[in-house]
Amino acid sequence: MLITFKSHAAQDLIMMKDLAMTLLGIIGKHLGERGVITTEELPRAIQKLEAAVQDARKVHPADTSVHPGKDDDQEEEPLHLGQRAYPFLDMLRASQKEGTDVMWGV
Image (cartoon, rainbow, N blue to C red):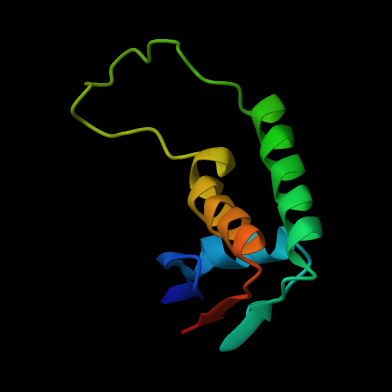
């Protein structure tokens, strides 16, 4: 299932339900059919998400080692939280700057 985040300050952001649940959980929200992050909630949401990204970097530093037996074309490494959270963080920051809410729906 896909979740669409909307804000007047940014382009729509579509993500998988599991990622949406993770990101919303970090900022203290629950995924429902519809929801909103108000302008008043944005500063704290951004702060929580930035802290989670920093923690994820400590747990999963960039892996530059070579994996024997793996072809470069075979399979890409999964994206870590920081990489997956940045588009959402960008939307939250733009919304804060413009003073507009972020809404989501199925």
